[in-house]
Length: 602
Image 1 (cartoon, helix red, strand yellow):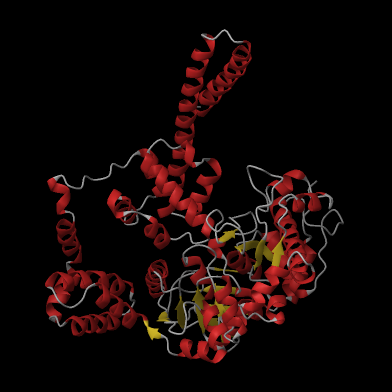
Image 2 (spheres, helix red, strand yellow; image 1 turned 90 degrees about the horizontal axis):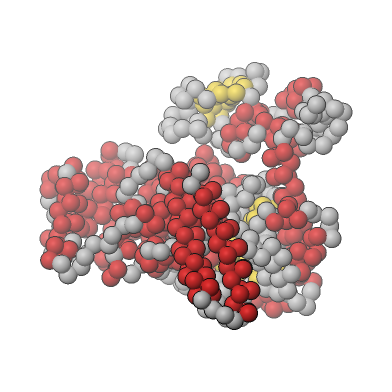
């Protein structure tokens, strides 16, 4: 019989855990009488309707009707199973759990929880080993010199557990194999190449362990420091794993969460070094997305504790596109947004190094409201000189107005637009109400060349649509696609180019809409196709991608079979002995391909 946590253990954890303190780490609570109240973390609301009863050890929202025990709350917030939630709270309360078979190990029935725990343990050990390589070995000396010259203190290096991955790509596998880890366990750890399992995914790089909100190492990021920069991406990042979802994790949140609660604000910045620079300068409420654009899940992690979001992305095209997208996401969740404009250097790390903590702090304090930022960018892109520019600027600004939750704010922002472009308020209101038609008129003007034959529209094949769907609906779908197929499996050259672009973005650690668009060439029409795809929605995106993967793999297999068939024909006409030997191998290959194609149709 499979073991499970005893009811007595569950009840002991429930008694010893302070439900107000636990939930208070996720939701700011205020006492009213015997109960505690706050804004519900499970739906959007402005007035508190979420209550916590100490006496009943129960929470309930009068708005969305979510409710349950402290275990259910942790299950929802941390995305854990019930046994995992009990384990999580037992550790916090110092309760030794017991199981129905008398054991004290993880329950056999929850193999997923056991596996997650084992992978976290593995990543913690590897991070410790990489940290030792950086700080105590000659091999890691150059990487330590690099971070020291970038202004990072020994305390910060220790706090963030920075490390160095050895240049020998076979060393890690050999080392871990001696520690009694199974081959399949290591194969699926994300630490090794999928094509070449003996080869480490990270090598000769400065390593940034990624922690979950509890402080456990769950993933890695690695920065390129030396060698041929054209052949190695600047950053490599762990993909999604059984114990880690990058879109639901924020770098340094474990270090920042207390300051975020106290300051009631958060800084979203570009990457590892920028985030660490903020922390070294005493601005400890900074966090960073992990190699992708900011997600709604990441915003929800901080939303219960903050009133203001500050955005600190790079000043290049990709960074500014990321800023605009983040503004809309945060405003839709009714958060005040400001933008940090770094005038003293290209990024926080550079400002810290060249000018010090005081200058970086002043830059943060001088952050401007998002509407001011957006209007200043629009005036640069569309100078107030022509009616067409005014119309384009208004249409672009309407997307921001749409994201606002208050009618008063919308009215004020439209007035600000009128002042900036010297246009009539009533005209702007009419265009705002009829913005769909305005957008269509502008699109007709901008695409008039399609009608005269000078710029034919790009044909969207099944392969190209599959690649676009994989990124526009859910970036994790592209990770799934790249694990199943390679660029050589595509026949459509545009699909092949799009896949390559996304691969480059993924490898560089900048997998976002803006970075993809920056790599698209306007001349071949790919950029417009990507933009259009982001306006569409597919309710069955995941199934569509899976079907497309099967189709692409089957078509690629058929093409390879055709090539093999042609080679067989040539070999059959040959009289050379070596060709006869090769012929037997080719016939075996063809039989295997025939079998795979038949199976793919089932």
